Image (cartoon, rainbow, N blue to C red):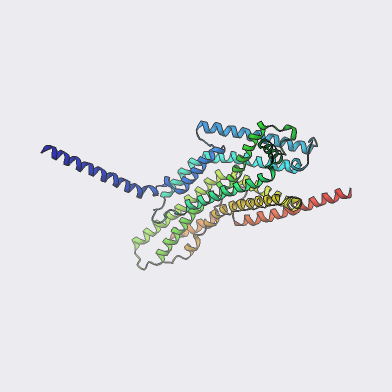
Length: 436
């Protein structure tokens, strides 16, 4: 009898325990996705930084990763030092060969490419060091408003993954097109490597300076530098998407609250007090959002300067080479030129446009505030209007320039102007040489 009673009690306790476990799991499914530390943007960006450790962006990672980053940094410095020395020799007239891939412009463009990757590596390293504090602040402001009024963005993670995939595939295709003209598939593997390195890195090595011990690390670093150069713009795009998404959520919150207030027919003193309190919380959310943009801008500003400057330089260079030298090249070289130029313009252009969207969406809530009914209008709505009008929010290049929609037109005009000046200067040099 006693044994039966004990078995029944044991079964009851076991079933209660299972029900509690199911209940806790069920509650976790409801709660965890809404927790700020499980934000889709922060999770995706953290994964990007984890993968970027393989190309030397280590930040405050484990000592093993920091050692790996220092090795890549040392290789960057060795290549950059040699490239700058080759440019100096060419300008001073000490160079043995200054034709084709060893001309002054080729040596300068090669040095600029590795300079862009080296400076981008240092700035990305700096950004990863400050990413932990940015994550904490980003997560903390998610609690400013109730999730009922600021729901999470369900498409943000998908859009970020699509952009990462497009950048990865496009970078691979562009790099393959750059490699193909320098290869000879009829030769042995060692000879193919020799030809490729001497063609693609002719600004760095002469025929008698070639060695397989130099070629293999150089081939590896060229791939790493290509990934690093594209990753700079990718980080700007992804960060801008996250900031824009949060502004879009706040703007939707303003639209919903304003529409609900405009359609209310009954009025009482208590509801007026609650409306003012809600609008104050919305205004505080915009204040914290602008503070978040400025904090991100401090970390991202150096990367924006480097990306904008070197993208501008290489777009001008590609256009100049296409206008002056493309007719002399083969069909494969023409395809390589077209793929490189199109991808460079699309990548740099989208980075600027994505960053400019932060400034655009920071004021999109104003029309909803202007349309508020006079009965619902209060001092908090007036303060929010004044705040959105006077507080200029935008990502910038370390304060030197702000990224907005007009910057795209300004950069386009500057590129066209400089390319025309370079073409005119090149034609004048050719005519003077012919006359002599």
